[in-house]
Length: 257
Ligand SMILES: Nc1ncnc2c1ncn2[C@@H]1O[C@H](COP(=O)(O)OP(=O)(O)OP(=O)(O)O)[C@@H](O)[C@H]1O
Ligand SMILES: [Mg+2]
Image 1 (cartoon, helix red, strand yellow):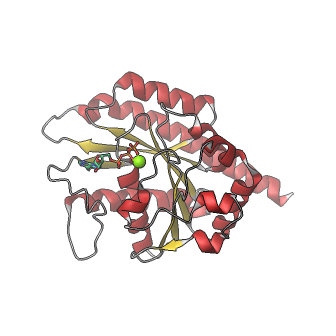
Image 2: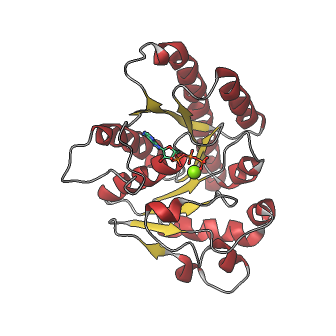
């Protein structure tokens, strides 16, 4: 679904590269990814996207932020939620304060309107973590949190969830219950095939559909990588997308009764 190269001169201060006035090489990848997601969500039933990878440092936060900006430019209303509750970092990419987010909403100190932060990017809002949350899984399973997501669905075309890595916590299981599917990232050269296999098995075991896969930090000089893994991923996500569409058709039919 997407392929993003490793940038040699990676600018930690400027990780959002989408800009209508520039022609950065990565722009094409985001346009493609955005178009795929628009297609998948053309029925409006796949708007809550869980951005995942097996390990840390595979590019989830960067891809999530850039994808949001790319979708925003096509007039889609997007909210990015920092659900990496142990190591939140999304606020830095959007140069926003971390304070005043999910933690305060959960405690009843702030309302939904209070925690939505408008970013400098058109149509892109952000919800940060706020104060430290000691037991993330309790947040994810709570009715209050589920209500927050349901409310956001009314307001936005896409809700992008920046998550913790699958192999490091079990958060993905809880988040998988509120998302419409996973955008699964694999970092070129660092994640092993068995780590990817294990993570994908976990998602399957928990009936969390993979809507698409993205390769990050791809090194063009080392050819053949996509050939090695590519067929395998195509099979995984084509299969899962079929399942997701079937699930959404069934839900529609149930609703009609
Ligand atoms: N295309 C890229 N080329 C080079 N470096 C990158 C690229 N994308 C992200 N990085 C860098 O790699 C590191 C990991 O990126 P990012 O934080 O987006 O990954 P992550 O999967 O969200 O990590 P974590 O699981 O720790 O939250 C960061 O230091 C980021 O600056
Ligand atoms: Mg991250």
